[in-house]
Image 1 (cartoon, rainbow, N blue to C red):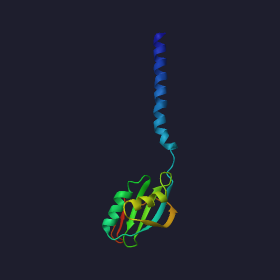
Image 2 (image 1 turned 90 degrees about the vertical axis):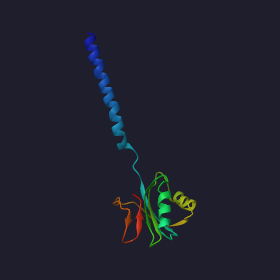
Image 3 (image 1 turned 30 degrees about the horizontal axis):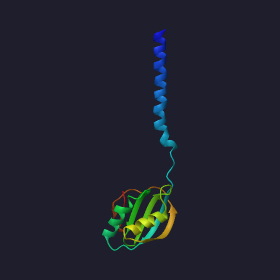
Image 4 (image 1 turned 120 degrees about the vertical axis):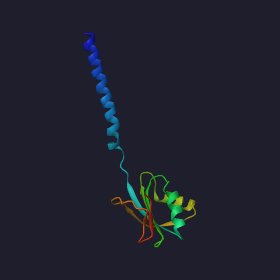
Length: 128
């Protein structure tokens, strides 16, 4: 009788552990989806150093997913999670590093771009 109770107790513990483990793997499926937005900012860019400064500093802003800096058009395209940040917060971050920016256009993010460090044809730098 005691052996049966021991086996039954072990089975119950196993089922509970399995249920607990499944919660950890199922939880990410129910997590909030990122609401990716894209904003193109006009910024006074003089050289590659300006782009590097923007990419190194703005990349650490909460919610920023991707940055593309284009020297030729003097624009910075920022893809961000709208659940974590917004355009006014991004503009304040640009002001904080001494590179004031203005919104040129804003859109919802499409497909993710392939990562590349610098586009030789356009001179655009991209965060990876």
